Amino acid sequence: MEVALGGTFDPVHDGHRALFDRAFQLGDVTVGLTSDGLAPQTREEDRPIRPYDSRFRALDSELAEYAEEHGRAYEIRRLEEPTGIATRADFDVLVVSPETEAGGRRINDLRSQHGREPLEIEVVDHVLAEDGDPISSTRIIRGEIDEHGRLTPERSGRRVRE
Image (tube, rainbow, N blue to C red; front, top):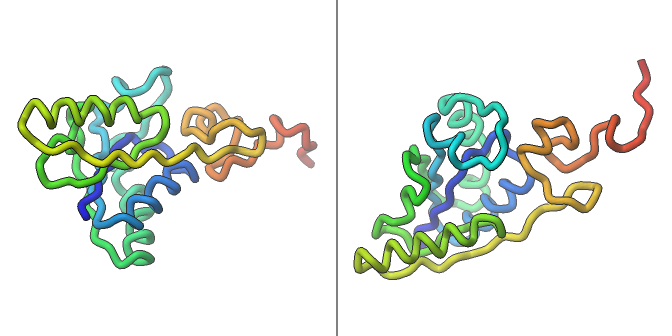
């Protein structure tokens, strides 16, 4: 099975890792990584985003571990438009998070317009942080949590020794 997913992945966190794990369980994986031009357009908030090459290296390192663990192949492709790679004919499944599920349906609409079969959409639930809210790159950038969803000392009420 050929599996697609996409995103900015800055920084990679346990929510992304849940997406990667599910994708590699299903088949060989192609990840669309947003270009420097597209990345800010896909964010609802204004925050810094690392350059493509830096995000590519971090993502490649993460994916290599999953590929080895599951005995699968993977590829990273640059995304220049929001619907990206998933409109191509060579995919069977699109792995999404709950907030990107609507985008997956939009991709299937585009595929239908081009005479292509719809993709199976695999929704992976959020991974929750210690406080019960979803882990997100934005929360990590804001200093609320780390990549594993642990609250930072300032947010958890724990005292930091100086």
